[in-house]
Length: 130
Image 1: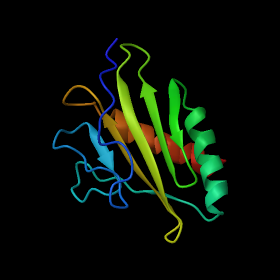
Image 2: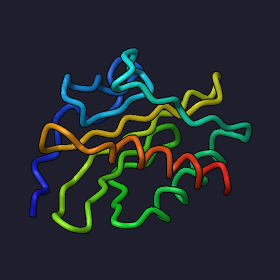
Image 3: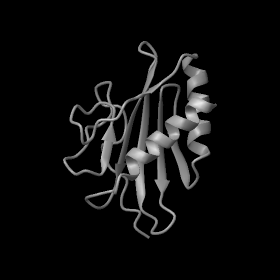
């Protein structure tokens, strides 16, 4: 119902994910300000094992569609159950640092009531349990 249009800035740009807009409906491990900053996911396995675990954690979340998955990048759309709002969620592996950078942003609206941050933390918890 409120899907919006897929943003043009999705994907890896200069080795990073896109910056968050000024609105409070986005979190990113590349952000430096407290409102948007979230820690990346950490892992100790191989990059390929981490990506398999990540896909499992995302798929267990529900109302999710993985759009792109490569050896170091994953892009998924998450749809809210009630109104059908779509959020764009990206993950970028830095195997040297053993982290998976994250960016989760709402397509529509100004505030997300903390949904993007909560989602990433739920994925982190599931990821760490797999």
